[in-house]
Image: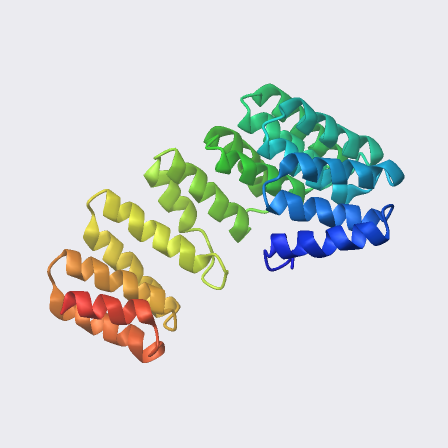
Length: 273
């Protein structure tokens, strides 16, 4: 019931189970999750704390408590619970990332940076950890911090497509479109990030009013990746913007040749007609 979001049914079943076994740690934990899903946070907190009475270091219940405290804006308790997780396990990546993100979203940038710096040091400058931290800075629109981290990663792995894509997003966020395009263009054709990078390049050219360059970028990409219907979808919209309906229909039909059931392509073709 909990997995499919049927929290009320889950609560009813679990309340009956609790009467049969009032000390069951598992029942208390899942009952807390059910009440949390119902947004009855005080009851959720009671059951999570009951779970922790017998298992003080039980990480799932502690993380569930964090969610309750975040939902009820109990900032001190959020920090306290994350710190408890980190005391139990100083290498807990999820807890350290969560605490840093919490500090950042609540305007405590210096505390966030301290947590992230400590985490980076403990992980021996793990690229995996640094990418996670950079993603948080990106999400919070702290673009300069993200760029600094990603630039450092590129010094060790200058062709990493994921790092390049994140860096492109950071420059896009800073509205430094020229640098963003240059970075996106460095992503290899065979990379999983290539298609998104090409779409970003076309979008940035379009924003600058350079529709022809956007079209050129997509046409080039269509030769590199001829089986990607999204390229033809975007091309069709650009030709439509130029009122070049003949070309628009042609590229949409090319996309439909690749993906005959693609609803977006059919819709765009109808719009052009």
